[in-house]
Length: 225
Image (cartoon, rainbow, N blue to C red; front, side, top):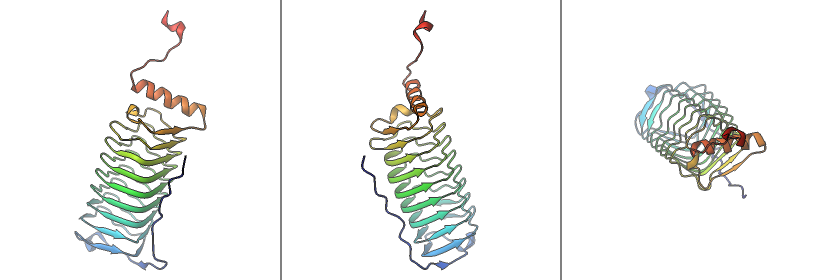
């Protein structure tokens, strides 16, 4: 299988340090080529905010409500994005590492050329989102909601998908490698996806989950009497 090349964020060598507060950012504001470190933007509300060429380190974006956010060429490291809601966001060339996105909601968002690594996205919601050249690596996505999402351009590597919901997704071309599937739902919608597992136990877990989702009961002949 050919490796899908994902473009990394394009940032200037020297970024301008900045420490904005939520009061400093209005609708249609533009944050360009900035380095934000330990900045608290919790509960920020804005529409059509544009952030481009920025690096955010240990920043707090928890509870932000950023409708129609435009996020381009941006890096987030060790950030708190829990319970944020970024409806209909357009995201291009994004890298997220070691961050907390518990309860994050991105309904209808379009995300392309993005990597999310070593992050927690429990109870994240991506309904009707579209993923193009997006890779999740070593992430925890307990009870994540992908209902009606387009996953045709998504790769999940070493992710914990316990309790995740995949009903009505588009998955032709999606790739799942060494993922955990306990109690995952809607797996019959993953038609056309590729699932690879190094462990026979993980393969059995996935097979069992798909069988259960399809309403098929597996049992031993002796139990049939």
